[in-house]
Structures are given as C-alpha cells and as structure tokens.
Amino acid sequence: MLQSMQIEGGYPLVGEINISGAKNLALPAMVTTLLTEDEIILNNVPDLSDVHSLLGLLEYLGCDINIDKVNSKLILKTTNIKYTEAPYDFVRKMRATILVLGPMVARFGAASVSFPGGCAIGVRAIDLHIKALQLLGAEVTMDNGFINVCAPNGLKGCEITFPIITVTGTENSIMAAVLAKGTTKLINAALEPEVEALCNLLNSMGAKITGQGTSIINIEGVEKLHGTTFDIIPDRIEAGTYAIASAITHGKLFLKNCIYKHLALFFNTLKLNGISIEEKQNGVMVENNNDKINPINIRTAPYPGFATDLQAQYMALMAISGGTSLITETLFENRFMHVSELNRMGANITIKGNTATVKGVNKLSGAQVMATDLRASASLILAGLFANGTTTVNRLYHIDRGYESIDKKLQQCGAHIKRISI
Ligand code: EPZ
Image 1 (cartoon, protein in one colour):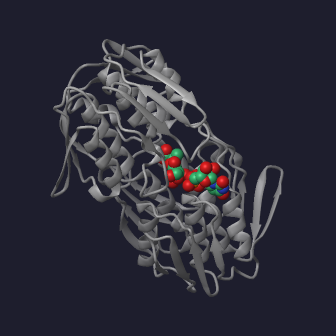
Image 2 (image 1 turned 180 degrees about the vertical axis):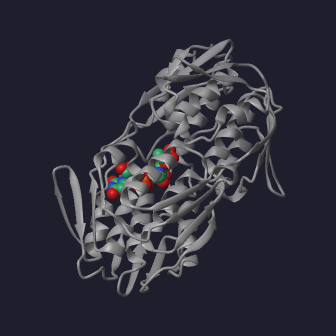
C-alpha cells in the first residue's frame, strides 16, 4: 500500500523537537561490525528505512543483530561471515552499501559489491573509492555488474590524495586502512562531523587515527580491532530541516540535542534571512517573528560549507522570501527536481545550469506533488506547511529513508499533517 503525506498549511509550529541520531553516521558506524569479531553496541540509532536496508545486508552477510527499538540501540556481532558479497538487491535499494567494501577487504581480504547505480540526484560515481583501495594494494576487477576487490596478502598503508572531497570515499578508505600494514595518509579528506565521529568510533575500537575533522587524516594500521559502545551524534540535516519548518511557519521550535557548530554556516545564513537563532544548553531555539524573509544567495559546498542536503529545504524558504535569491548546487548534477513541484504550488523558480533563481512570492497553494528523492520530499513538506489549503506529497517512501517519524514530530508542534494510504 503506497503512502502519502497530507498537510493543511498555515499553522505556526511551536514546541520542542527531539533530533534523532544522524543517518549518515549510523550507516558507516554499522558496517564497522565487519572489522571485528567482538560486539559493537550503537546508541541513538535512528529508526529509518535506510538503516533497516543496511541491517538486511549485514544479516545476509552473517552478522548477528539485536535491535532494542525502545532505546534506539543496535547490538551487532560478526563472529563468522557467511559471504563477502553484497548482492544487487541490497545495493540497488541504497548506495551507501558500498561502505562494506573497505571493512570487508580489510578483515577478510576479499569483497564483492554489486555496482551501485546512480540515483535521482546524480551519477554518484565511486571511482575514488576504487582508486583508494587499489593504492592500498587491492586488486579490483569489475564483471557482471560487480566490483570485486581482493587483497590476499592484506593491505599496505600509503598516501591517498582525493582530487575532490568525497564523504563515503573518505570513510571507505579509513575503514580499509585501519587494519593495513603501516600508515595511511589521506589528503583532501572529507571534514564532515559524521566522518570525524566515525574516526572516533574506530579509535574506541583500538584504531589509531589522527587528524579527523581536518583535511589530512593519518591512520596507523593495527593487527586487530575490539568491540565498543558508541553514541551516534545528532542528525544535523534533520535539525536544519526543522529549523526551516520553524522559519517557514513563523513559528518557534526548540531543536533538542542539535549541535550548533555542526550547522554554524547554515544558522548564520538563517540569521541573515531574519530568523532568530539562539544556542541553548542542549539544543538550539529557532524563531521567526518577522513579516518577510530576507532573500540570501547560497552555494552548496562540502562541510563546513552550505550542506547540499539542506539545499532543497532552503529553496522552499526562499520561495516565499521578500525578494529574489540565487541557489547554486555544486555537488550533484541533478538536485533540482523539487523545483517543478514547488512551481506547481505557485513558486516562481527558474533554473540555468546549476543555479536556480528563486523569486519570492506571497503565497503558495496546496497541491498534489510528487517526491523524487529524500531531501526534495522534505522540501515539499515544508512548502506544504506554509501553503494555503491541502498539500499531498506522494511517494512517501523517500522521506522515510532519512527522517524518523517526521509526521509525529511535526504534529506534536501543531502541524496539521497526517499519513494516508492510497
Ligand atoms: C554523502 O554521499 C552523503 N551520504 C550524502 O547524503 C551527501 O549529499 C554527500 O555525502 C555530500 O555531502 C552518506 O553519507 C551516506 P560524495 P556520498 O562522495 O559520499 C563525486 C542524504 O541526503 N564523487 O561526497 O555519496 C560525486 O559524484 C545523502 O543524506 C566522485 O566523482 O557523496 C559528487 O559529485 C544524499 N567519485 C561529489 O563527489 C567518487 O568516487 C560528492 O560526493 C565519489 C564521489
């Protein structure tokens, strides 16, 4: 049964939203179980369909899984692996399964992963993942749609320079290098908080990583890694999405557990838009008591730049700003699919190359709209919270990949939003 989200717009959101664990840390954190036969305990794991997809693959590979849903806890133990192959059916559901490559070849000397296709937002190349593994001494072949990696004599530390910053490319390289002989130096590594937290998790397992959070990361290979217990950091993209929900509805939302510094540039942009942002003891207060939103241009960039994963949501806010703003997407070649749906709600957005020109309008009208990818669906829900009348967002499976109980969290703050089966 397909599900849609039905939203009656025009209600200011007031209250507190508990920010869940970060999807883009939970996924790499889960695959660290492949690096040790000991138990890995992860706390604050978000209840998302992407997490469940990856659990399906880990179970197929031979991982023992205990899910404590009430406490958002995952207990993983990979004493003996049945396969070192990630079949197409798992990979096609979620590209991030490519993250099993590094740890599998590091611990077992071999791994095969079905070549992940592109997705709605772009080709999503993985050439840099492969290059890094080859530099670490692995042989990589591709046939029948599979990437086969083998390193029968183990991996050897080396220097890897990334020509462009890649988040999962950095993560795969780190998880391959932690058990390599010798030291690996990553240059132009990703700085994302999720990458830094993954390194801290691996160090709690006995890895020897330094430089995380900077563009130069050093990994001194060790013989073995042991188990650990680790807390997943709050999801900065979820938090940023709800910050815009507060701004677009002229509301006042407290984002509990949000880490201000993970969204510093984004929050500074919202302040320029005229939104009040206040860092508190255990979260961030976001309030909009201005009549009009100031239009501010943005360009997406790797962390600490403006997150590409917040671009679609920001566009919904700019669609109702008091002027014209330019939004440039520099990371993915097709991440403007929310534009046509926003325009169907009355927005006035045109695209030239990788820049959208957003002319603010006074009102949006509710409509039937189609979600195309995870963050585009968030953008449409945000627009629906503002629009006059009813907005129905179809293909809801996109949103459930990355937002835990988004309807419940919004309902608790006064949103007129409900899930319907069609
Ligand atoms: C991660 O994807 C995130 N996913 C994405 O979040 C996020 O949008 C992206 O980083 C950028 O911040 C996870 O962490 C699971 P990249 P990733 O490799 O690692 C090119 C969401 O909504 N590239 O940093 O796949 C690539 O084409 C998702 O939560 C190569 O050319 O992104 C892109 O243009 C969407 N060759 C750029 O680099 C490679 O080998 C950045 O991609 C790898 C990447």
